Image 1 (cartoon, rainbow, N blue to C red):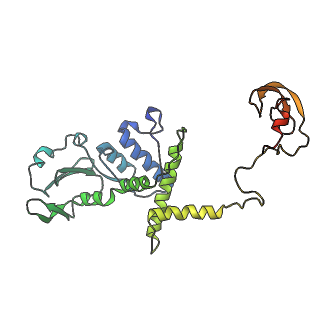
Image 2: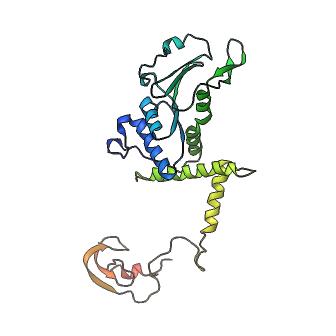
Image 3: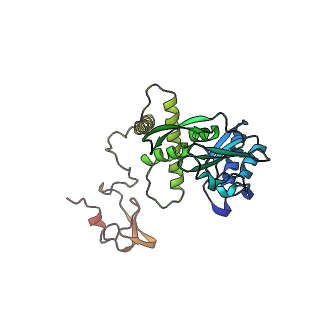
Length: 286
């Protein structure tokens, strides 16, 4: 799990010349490679995607696929306006000099996607509902569109799972929400792994309850015999009637009985007490 809170210009993101979204992907890719060198394939949405980003990933030996905004295609010859009028299921593609493929596919609206690894072939079939025919039909779908749909949505599902049973802490510490969010993410990821490696997976609520029960049982501390619970007190009982002597003190403090300023203190209880309040304070009230 890798998290980088947004910190504006003072943040630790590198490669900002590629843009904010692209710098996040590059920083994440560097963390992946630092952990283990492999040919990772990253899938992201149009907030991050740009042709310079895909070229940078190619230089790093990584693959990338993502939807792309029309103003980031660097004057790609695909006519996106004309794509609005063609038949549903049609597509057009173009490969740049750097080997980046840009493909526009007509669904209900035009979807533009770019990749440095996946091409159009083989074309698969996508099941869609036809309003005019009033039935489900199959549309030709390029491979990179199918791969994108197959691998996207994990972050959205994660956010949905976290929001169901989010840790709620009322406080003014700015970092509390970050710490609690990391715990929620760890639990959600553990639950996903649990479902993959068990025959009878639990739902998310039962899984969180199981974790809480386990730690309560493991770190349970038996109560001290004779004490009914609650916060242990550091004060000596004031009603024992022994060694409660008043001595003068330099600074004034509140009297434990009348709550007015006093210059005398009990050496045993270590609380301020007036001489006139001495008897009343140390007498058990019935």
